[in-house]
Amino acid sequence: MELNWPAPVFMGGIFLFAIHVSENWKRLKKQFVFQILFSLFLIIVVTTQTFYPILSLNKKADITNRYYKYQSIIYDLSEYLNNFPELKEKRILSNNFQIPSIINFYLKPKLEAGCLSIGYHETLYSFLYPDKKYIGDNFLYLSKSSQFPNKIKPYFSNIKLIKQFSSKRDSKIISEFSLWEANGYSGKQ
Image 1: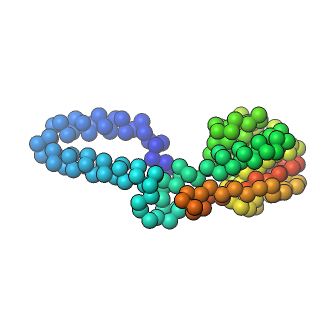
Image 2: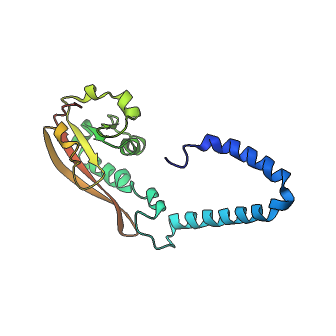
Image 3: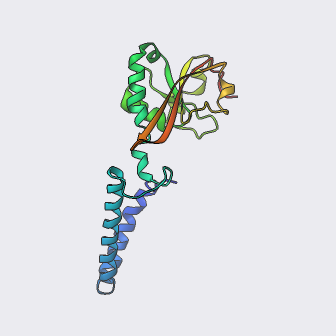
């Protein structure tokens, strides 16, 4: 579960917390001030880490890498597709809803990108573009690694690597993507 999912509950919690603090203000004043200052300190550290890495963390432990993770899709993939306009005639698929969402938001392709949801939960794309609409079509498939996912291979008759992209932060690779030509989609069994 991501931290933002229970956000509506936070509003009620803030209201109840405010009542509790106001009733016990004299006793909780020092703790409350400490908590505010500590929270501000953490916010400053995370914000600074986002733009100027001050903590030496590996790529998985540094949550601020999320801001740089998809740069190669936004910039490198966009440039590559502009250099090869014939590829823009194919729909881009992935098996993760974040990738097509980023492609649709930043690249605004002629054919909206979609999510296959094979061994992955159903997404909005599953309702917009049911699997049976894809059967027999040819696509560009964007993988979150340098390899084509084994669980997706059986669903295509022909797969060919086109290009690999790397997202970097301070010359360190934080994520890799690969673009594949995936032809003859057979549909989910």
